[in-house]
Image (cartoon, rainbow, N blue to C red; front, side, top):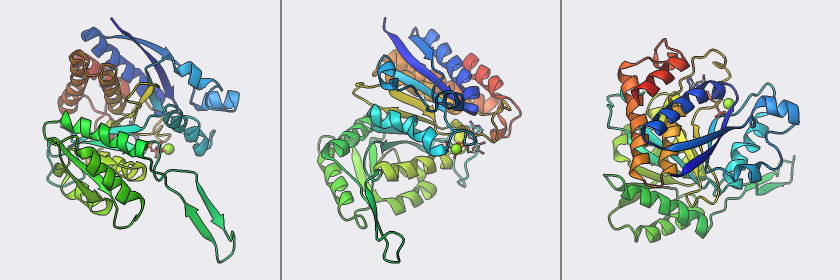
Length: 358
Ligand code: ATP
Ligand code: MG
């Protein structure tokens, strides 16, 4: 039987509080479905490490982590001690680029027992997968200023779209649509405004779509698309977007589906040349850290996504994933809840309830 080696990094703030619950659920599901996980804990990517070493990770972080299939990550950020740009650039963004985690995947589902800010929406109305390109596009450090400090100042910010980079994220999204009952795909564009990059994105979408005759797809401009997320979220199944548009949609989506305390995410290198990373959407939440009241569901759900990834389509792993999500749902309906969901339970009580439901 395969033994899966995973690297565990709890990070800062509530990352440290939700990680034990993420591990508890992971271990419960793994043992129930006969999946062997070997977890190694790392004290990297946190304020304590930075204070001691002046950096977020050791210099040979990439070599060390190459021994693992996945990184299970809590949250990073402790602004009193580590400037925000350092904690982010030297940890999560280093992983994304260094490990070519070109897919950022966020399931967005309205769960039972979770209030949505959208009126008249019920469970089943919001059930989509947001696929964001994670390594290129609008997010570059290329560009600059000319006539600095004068009233003729000009600032240029470049975007880069490569055939390889665009095609691989589109292919991933179409493959994903094929696995879903509705087989629907929406591509985010803005080809009426960004006159060079987005027409290219659309052209590649049309081309890649030819290999997927069963997928019904369309493209929508990002402005109307965001409006429809709020007005008609039931229209969406798989949504694929460039780095910038995907970044925006993948915060808007979870917001439409209620608290960010439950939203999970995956940063993946689907070819498995490098480790992939699974983490909650939320950050380290310094405002509630240390109180033991953080919602552990986003962490636990991220662990479910990791199991599914480790299984490479194997039914047993998929069942383990589904068991965790079902346990989350049952606890949301009738179990203990943390204060962000108007409950009075603490992090550990919710984590234990989910583990025993598994
Ligand atoms: P980042 O900069 O890392 O994206 P942030 O500082 O913008 O994160 P978070 O740390 O996610 O944001 O916190 C945003 C708000 O949501 C805070 O008020 C925080 O208390 C709350 N929050 C975040 N995660 C949770 C959670 N798991 N349970 C309860 N509340 C949470
Ligand atoms: Mg923050």
